[in-house]
Length: 410
Image 1: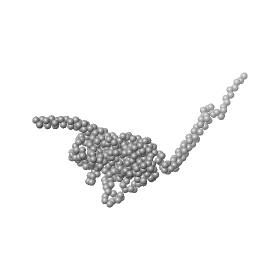
Image 2: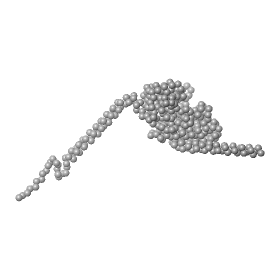
Image 3: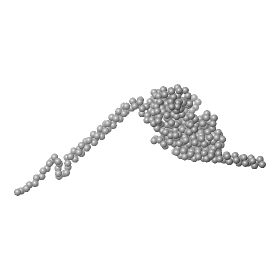
Image 4: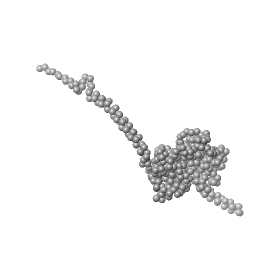
């Protein structure tokens, strides 16, 4: 009986000779079509979200107070400020943007309330103010003044800081407190070191460096036990209409402390307008850097040593005045006479040397604040060693004098 072999070919399952499968072709086709569709859908969603956010932008700006992320700071109402300051009865100073008042919280904590101009509460000024406050509330260091809170009530902007009872460094080396009591060199060297450590933290200890912009002796405050703390950091940028003439200088710093690489220094002539300012030879980079703060700190160091302001009635800047005496080898002529030669000469020299490095005209030649801190630690150690040894030698000298007196009496 003949047998037959039947081969069945199913066209639905594909061609066994060419090995192609319609399932694979269908999968490839679906992939080719689906991927662009998904990409287009994602782009459409992204565009929709972007447009929605732009549309909601003005509303969020109107209610941007709620977007400040605070740590320990709190928001005060204007009515609370009135109560805290006893209706602003005790003005203790004048800040770059308004008066400063003494106040007291309900728990007895003393504070300094720094008011800002009403014009800074509108438009971009408000946005910048809130952005700065949001960053400042996260900054904490033992040598930085504590920001207790803030106020953004209607047209009233204010910053509430811890109160520093012993005034500013300026008050204690040149101002009212200096008349009553002279700061010794050990205290001056310690204050310089503490301020340097605070500034170094702003430059290197934060997620992003904070540039002070207006470091000066007035902004180094002294608390209990004369511990130094830096104030007004990060808020020296102008929130006021730049058309106001006084902002043209204070927005970038204070005359005498400004980095010569940053800004033209205006020389005001009698009866001249803002448009008639005569500018010096200094160039403009338009950028503030940590090195700008280093320059300002160098000027502060020279103030600590000399007891003189950066600019006297004479047009010679403190850096030039000190350089001339250093070149002549007359270091003692630099030192504040109120110190009455009660200091370690090497300690003084280390501070002067570092100050002159900090105030070099080319910013790339200046040290970092970490380097400044290291040298100031050495300077303080030298002075503390002198004080300790002088106490011992004073006892010894008294003994020697008494012995000499006894011997001469014979």
